[in-house]
Length: 113
Image (cartoon, rainbow, N blue to C red; front, side):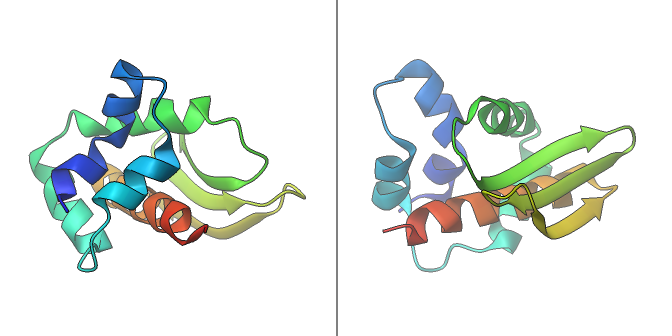
């Protein structure tokens, strides 16, 4: 039940590829988890962003949350299996973009039972 453990899942997966995102999220998730908690953590720990960007690029799934950098903007959305971009948001603030992405990615995995 640690925010730090949840947010560092991509780093943990890099060091041990036999682990599953689903199992780690289920193990570390806690009820008070929120987008604001993620944002507060990110503004103090800037090294996390790149881990999540690489995690997003390396995912091998038909649908899910995506973050992409497009010049000065960050686009975050849910890509469904029909290639439709749902819940699309564009950010200029990197920390806000990543907190929105990380929060939704983790909740999506947690709720996928």
